[in-house]
Image 1 (tube, helix red, strand yellow):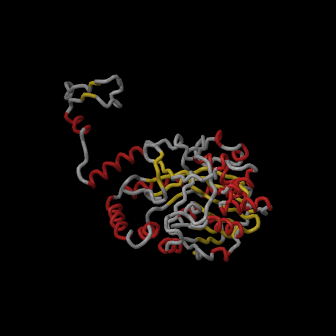
Image 2 (cartoon, rainbow, N blue to C red):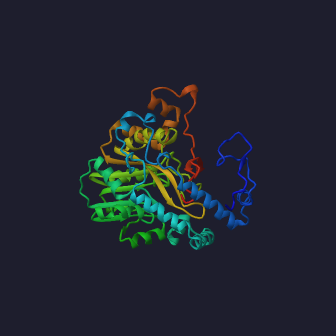
Image 3 (cartoon, one colour):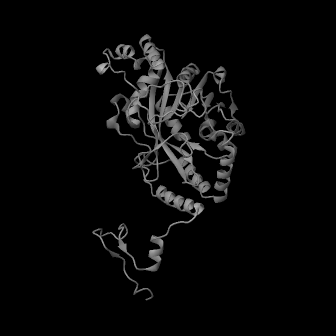
Length: 400
């Protein structure tokens, strides 16, 4: 037979697996070429890196990546009881059909070299005068996915929401992709976004677009969506108060937030991409910050957590790889009266008074250790790369 005399790869180290061995002596000319191949030129290198990244994404085990699971041992027992799984499959740890379609379409657009070349050229030309969000709106790219209609209905059912299903508003809706999944459930659908191109996209979907500064005047609303907005908002405390005040009796507020918490304001008053108002979020990792959010951010404002879950926050890919993802915690709240004690705690949180010795003593009953003033450590948002490693990121990293 032809090739019968071809030399067999020989392992020159203690690794018995020829496939994984890094020191295999391969005398076959083809093997030597493939192993020593290095792309030449920027485009060839980019395509080569993308192919490797996409291959790793394709082999990526989403269940092991814990897209839809949490470590219950790191979460307080009363909060564990409020958690529901939203993944598909027998173990509830796989993407559902809507998410799979999003990933498939993202891969197809990412593989289109002419489309991605046009996007890259346009981004470079437009980045001097408009924001990245507006560029994405003009190009019709950078679409996001949070949950499907089925997943949303599971959240509503778990929170005992039975209607009425008259009005929905999605704040910071972007191109309206997530809003469109649940729009048919409501009689009226409103949306806001600060970007003019995104407003055009929302109008094309037949949503009523409201002014970002006056949206609450149209309320109250039966359901309000605030998806991945609090960490991009310049005044999150002001927004939360308006969200609660704009809920109709028996209404639901749905908040999605990337954790670990790392705020980044694209356009704000300070001009340094940091918010003007402070959210007192503490703890390490997603599980470590859940209790802090519920107890220190939402409860003092009279927002009671009824149910929560974890989902991947998916973003359309580019020439780098087929798609990107971050960990999203999704909460469902109802409005409740605020007690005097909660109001005092809220004021401390909003003014940062717990970060002074006097505020710390009032809140905890004891002075700070060694007379020191407790500080909120600055944390960087982490995105997951194709190797499953945590990498430093922010909203400006890749497509987020």
